[in-house]
Image (cartoon, rainbow, N blue to C red; front, side, top):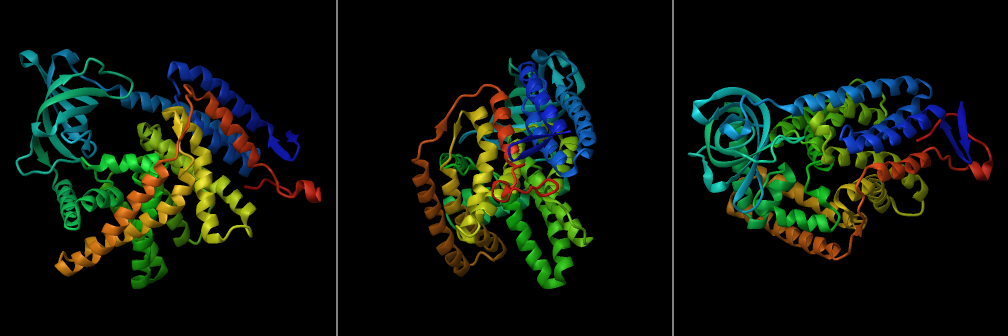
Length: 487
């Protein structure tokens, strides 16, 4: 059975599933069971149904079971175990699961997988719990070692009263010492330190901005750049994502193509992106980008055709199974929704504007519009603000950042002689100034403000966006409908 609405044609199962998810979200959101996870399910379920017709109904049942498995796995992994009450715990032992994040000029936030605890009166015991540690920089005893992901540490302090919440335990550290570093992890941390030192040869801003854009490295002064880009509506530039992975992948492919041909280019770029992912850390948006590129590369190597939405869908499912807490994060949701907007709404806008706007302006404009369309409601839901000026700001800042990144990457591979320092500095320093001036200019435009406390309005916004994807151009002019569904 199909339902026709003017020039729209919808399979009835799709409407049923969407309505059920809307109703279920409005009830389960209050209980904290699903949160915002099912927002993305609506898109992927719809895309599946559009492409496969009634076979999508069976696929939707699989996704529903996947949803329940995801929720169970998420709650299980976040539950944690501590052998004694938090009031009696004084010392934690464990391994850092991510690199430190600067909370200011003197304090750090660390994420640790706690494996052992020491309590008052000599009580000890094994633990299995993710812990978020806040500590002052001066309280860390490094002894020449570098601290980062994979470092085994011992930290003393007290749990926060609000610990034991839904996501993680909070520990206020007083003193931290490094117990050991894995050999491979030690090499990684020393490489990152050398990259930071190499960037500092150009300028203070280069020391902060270039490592942040290339490798996502944090710095006490990074916040001022992040705030600058956020107010201009281009906060995604500072967050490692498909944009950054794509730039690295293109460089690796070109190098491999020159040396070993097309197949060699794909193999080298795929392997290089896996190393790049290990180097910078498994961030949700970057995991999505690299996994999609690997699927794309495998398709090219095996000479198989592929559908972009299918690749995005499969990447999402695998990502959710491997790391449920990561896929449930805001950065992951924004990453998948932004790319969905680019692939669906952006491509549709590109077709409409073809012949009206030059291609060099049309492609980035449609991509920016598509990403904003699919993410704006979620941004309003979480932050209460959205920056539409980011559509125009991206057209200016993205090419500048691309040039800055390529010049900066080449600088990292050149020796630090005075001549090369003068040559690259003459390009990087003016580009940094131009980026700041442009970001400040777009930052003067006021954002759109709204306060949406639940995900219900987001869902109601997303439904008409999905309905528009069923529209067939030319229906009212020629009066003839093509067979099948089109994206």
